[in-house]
Amino acid sequence: MSPIKLLERLIQLGFVLFGISLIVFLMMEATPGDPVEIMLGDSLASAEQKELLRRDMGLDRPLVARYLHFVGNALGGEFGQSFFHRRPVADLILERLPATIELTLVAMVVAVAVAIPLGIIAAVHRGGLLDRLASVGAMLGVSMPGFWFGILLIMLFAVRLHLLPVAGRIGYSHEVPAVTGLLLVDSLIALQPASFLAALGHLVLPAVTLGLAMAAILMRVTRTAMLEVLSQDYMTFAEAKGLSRRRILVRHGLKNALIPTVTVAAIETGSLLGGNMIVETIFAWPGLGRLVVEAIFARNYPVVQACVLFYAVTYVLLNFVADVLYTVLNPKVRL
Amino acid sequence: MSESAGPLAAATAATTPARRHLRELGRDGATMAAVAVVLLFALMALLAPWIAPQDPYRADFLRRLQPPAWIEGGSWAFPLGCDALGRDLLSRIVHGARVSMLIGLLVVVVATSVGVLAGLLAGYLRGWVDVVISRLVDILLGFPYLIFAIGLMAALGPGFLNMLVALVYKEWVLPCRVVRAETLAAREQDFVEAARALGASRRHIMLREILPNILSPVIVVATFRVAYVIIIEASLSFLGLGVQPPTASWGSMIADGRQFLLNAWWVSTFPGLAILALVLAINVASQGLRDVLDPRFAR
Image (cartoon, helix red, strand yellow):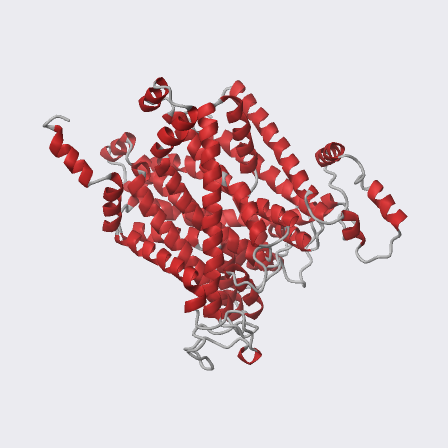
């Protein structure tokens, strides 16, 4: 990518981030009710005390000043105090983030592990029974409401068969010293195989639920890319050279077919993040998504605001990286 | 008209594009089955008060968590069993179709209208109009769908109308992008050139010349989006941010059943099946429609 193009994209990125911050700010300005009243709840604060708190929170200043204050703070990682936890919102987010990252990564691994082999098989047997089964599966995957699929999984594997835990991240009996915050990694560092297995067991159902829709999309992308590659001259040439079919597919086919798949996977990671509110709610997963949902019902607006901003910024940055990655991998594409 | 054009003109008159498309669609069995299912759900939604076997809101604690008819303890008067308040599940599912269908259609129709208009303006007028609209689109695309809807619902409060607003806010962006791209391509074509040379107004060119020519992709996108919006509505209702109780909606019915997974699987399972059936049918039908209207995407 030429430096000028990159600069253009960066400016556009900055503009989008600015717009997002403005929308998130206005969203929360539009919330009904006085934040001071919500924060104090039923307490018997006097009018002066309320006024003091209002000034303390900067609520008496004009809109533009409050927006600038909000952006300035957000840039410094400062999102104010949670109404109820009485702790900085940034701390809450950081505390919940590893659980969400771990779930998202494992879901992505599940999706890729299912989608790429299926996509290749479908392309190689184009029009055959396997191809048709795979495309029916993909259609089901995108049409299935994720939260319902998760509940079915719980009913089958946790409630009926008692194979996997119903909810949570790891049993209470496990104490894993935090290093990275990712339990799978930390339990290995601490050499606690039992804890590792417990964490893995808790991850299976939420990760499968979250990865389902992505697997369906990735499968289609892999299939299309593989079909495209299979029709290329160099594939025919490789065949004419007498290379074995497996070798042709892996060495020549897969390598080229993976480029679009990787890009779509990167983009979809963003939407995985966006879909985790539901999955985390179903599986009582102590991550960011659950934090947002809890905060909404508690009318804990600073937390909602910070989380929405955090989600959107992460999403935009991931998409940006995916875009750049795509052009680097695939020089034919102009941004 | 010359002599030789006669038979040709007659032939094309007999097979207008619309009729040809319909005939092509008719030949595709899966698509026709999907269309039939969608129509069935639409009828169900329209006629809900007349065809639901029971009153969906009548609670009867004697029937609390009554199982489906084919399981011991069930009765054919309540074929799919009852929920925790003893309300008939089938009747609630039939009524729930109203919320899903209405939200799906209304959101997509309103959002598509807004998006088409914005896309036409951006693509045809270019200049600062295009800059403003396109930047707004970029910004809105920067939000993951559900988090945007959730944030806005948190601000507006739950309820049918607020959900409609929250979803339209984000949904118009997609048709707008499609229409803008198509308009950019169309405005350079001869028929637009010709209309401009004849002194047609910008409004006439946008609405009468360009719009009819770019309608296919817009319709294709819109039909797919109905399915997506229905899932988002169900998700919001599942989280308790959508339509409020006691109104029956599939998403909130699934949420109701979460506490009874151990002893009453039917409460969550059947509303979910309804969502799956409807969304699947819409997706399959849209795919069939796309293959006919927009052969570029045909597999």
